[in-house]
Image (tube, rainbow, N blue to C red; front, top):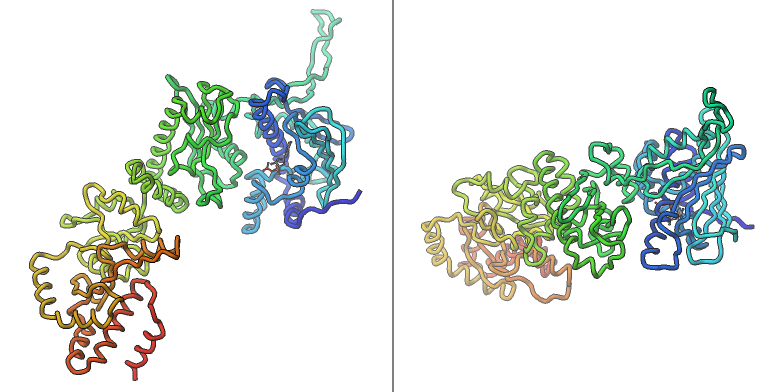
Length: 629
Ligand code: ADP
C-alpha cells in the first residue's frame, strides 16, 4: 500500500519532537488520554439529543492495555471515533490547535523544555513509540479504519475491524536505550503515577488490569497464603478540578487544565475558582488569559464559557454566561440546577443562568480590579491585549455598561508617560483644572508635539493621549468622569482663557478682520471659517473641526467606509502673535500675490500637522520652492 506523506510542517515538528527531548516524554499519555476523553465527551453530547446512541453514561470508559512481551501499550475509548477523512485530516497534520502554539513558540526559542508545558497532541505518541496504529470507527458509520505510521515520513490507511464506535491508539514502544527506558511505560506503577499526576480529573473511568493479591481460598485462617491475580481497576478519581476544594488544587494543575482545555500554551494571568450555594448553586473555574487568541477581535471568535450540569458538559460555549466586554475570559461553569436536556433556547430565558452570569460578571470585575491595584505590570499586560474589548464595552449599547467598565480602562498619560486610569487622572488634577483633557492621534510622540498639549503641560495639566480608534468614542459616551467633563484639546475650547483674554482676542480679531477675510477668500471652499486663536502656543496655525465631527473620527469613518462624502468642518485658526502670520498681514498691503501664497502655505502646514491629506501636494511643494528662490 502506498504511503501518504505528512505535510511539510508536520514533518519538521515531528523531527524536533522525536529527537530533541527526553525529560517530558511521559506527557504522551496525558495527551492520548485527553483525546480519548474529548472523544467520549462528543459522543456523550450527541447522546443527549439522539436516543440511538444506545450507550449509557456509565458505559463510557477509557481502557489502557499493556502487552508487556510485545512492548505494546494501547489506549482505547468508546467515544465518537473518526471517519477515514477525519483520520487523515487530524492525524496527518500537525499545524492544528494546540500544536500551533507549540510551533510558534518553537520558532522563537531554542528551549526544548517547553514541550512539557502544553499539549502537543496526538503526535506526542511518537516520542515513545516507534510505530503507532490507530483503529477507529466513527459513531453511525459501518466501516472502521486503520491508520499506521512510524512517524518519520508518512502513514498508510486501510479498512479494519472494530465492533463499536471508538478509537484504539496502539503504541509499539521504542527499544530501551542507555538514556531512556521506554518499557517503564508498561509498568503498572508508572502508569498509575502518570494518570494521577496528569489525568486524575478526567471524568470517565480510566481502566486498567492491575495486579492484586488475595488470600488463597483453601489456605488456613491461621496460616494464610496469598496469591496475586489481575483485575480491572479505575486509576483516576474522576473528580473534575472545579469540584475539588481550592486548597487541594495546585497552581500547576490549574494551569495544566487551562492549557489542555483551551488550547493555549501560555500561562493564564489569573485563575478564579469560585462556587455558590443557595437558591442557585454552581461552581466555576475562570481564567483570564495572558494573550488574545489570534482571531479575538474578529467575527470568528466564539466567546462563552463551557457549561456543565453536574459534571456533564451540556454546552461547548455558552455566550449568555459572559458579558461581551469580558468575552476574553475562558472557563467552565457547572450547576446542578440545570437540566441535562435543556435546549439552547430555553437556556437563554433560564433564571438560574441569569443569576449565575451576574455573579460571574462581578467576580471577573473584582479580579481585574484586584490585579489593577496589586500588580500594575500584569494589568498593563492584560490591558494591552484586551483593553480594546473593555473600551468597546464602555461604548456598546449607548453606554449601558459604562459603570461596569470605566474604572478598568487605561489611557496613556502625557504627564506620567504611561497608561493610567481615569481615577488616577482625576485624583491628580490641579485644583484649577475643570476638564479632563484628551487628544487623539496616531502616536503619543506625535501628539506630544501638538501646541495644545504644550500649552496645557505649561499649566501643569495632564493630557490623555488617545491612540486607539475607539478611545474618542469612549470619551463621547462617558461624557464626564467624577463630574469632570471630557474635553478634546484639539477641537474644543480649552477653557483656559479669562474673560479679559477673550475680550482682548475679540478686539484683535476686529483689528485683523481684513486679514481674516482675505485668507478666507483666498482659500475659498477649503475652509469654512478663519479665526484667531489663543491656544496655539508657539505654532502659527492649526485646523480644527469646530463643533463638527473630529478629524480622528472622520478618519475612522472613512476607513470603515471610504465612500462617505462628508468631510468634517474645517476651521483655520491663526496665531496673531506669530511672525509668519504677521508677515502675511504685512504682505497683504504691498504684494497681494505673496500674501495669497502665504495663506496657502500656512493652510497646508496646518493640514500636515493635523495629519490630514493635502488636496494638491504638488502645488504645495511648488509654493515652498517658489519661496526659496
Ligand atoms: P488536539 O487534541 O489538540 O486537537 P491532537 O493532535 O491531539 O490535537 O488530535 C487531533 C485531532 O484528532 C483531535 O482534535 C480529534 O479530532 C482527533 N482525535 C485524536 N484522538 C482521538 C480519539 N481518541 N478519538 C476521536 N478523535 C480523536
